[in-house]
Length: 332
Image (cartoon, rainbow, N blue to C red):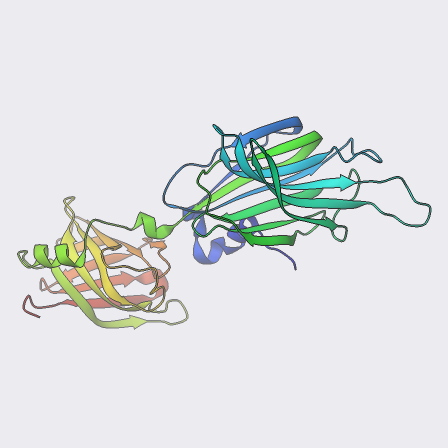
């Protein structure tokens, strides 16, 4: 199975979904050789992290015939104080030459390392799609930090999936690499992606919204979907939202999601930030930041208007679309 890594997929999706705003990538160009050493590559510790990835390309220049003592590994869930981590490795095996058969291979393994020793979780021999002997190979790993699902991929050309398995979600964000013997590294890159829902959480609940808005004056209040004008070639509705409009203390308003999501209904929760109105020099006209159904930010040329203290109009000219919401009476 061909594998499109998280690193590559992010690039491919940039024109369509702007996932870059939720990802960070670091190229470790200063690391070019490694010999019998572990190097830790920290990932920021944050509850908002959703996934992390590490990809390297390396060769073992001293992978001699008959010697299994050369390997390159990726480490994750590193607990530095207790010397515990998970490890995936590729090890070139080059037994004594046979005049008829080429018996070279790559040994792939997954282990759990603890101070008392290594526990082997998975091992297999690889040949197709991998460079043998001293050839360069890619080894990469992607980890879902919430669910613990892990994908490992590699090869000498276009990467292929080697293994997919689930372990307990990592307790530690630190990843790293290890060389047994000597490794020449031509690529080393780490990436982490945040969970956008964490960025949009607020302290609002349906109870605190009802209590606050029950005492507030228009245009603050609960708003329901009214109508729209849109070109489906550019924009599709993510739902017929119910929203709350509350002052944010900066001269504008926060738009709080209440319910009504259809796209992404499982990730949108009451109280999350759906948008923000930033004041302009024009009365009742605002610059708009809007978080779409997939929680990605839209702001370029977006604007909002509050009419009659009761009609919230959102305009997305680049998407050839606009949506209106109406204030719900206090007793409804």
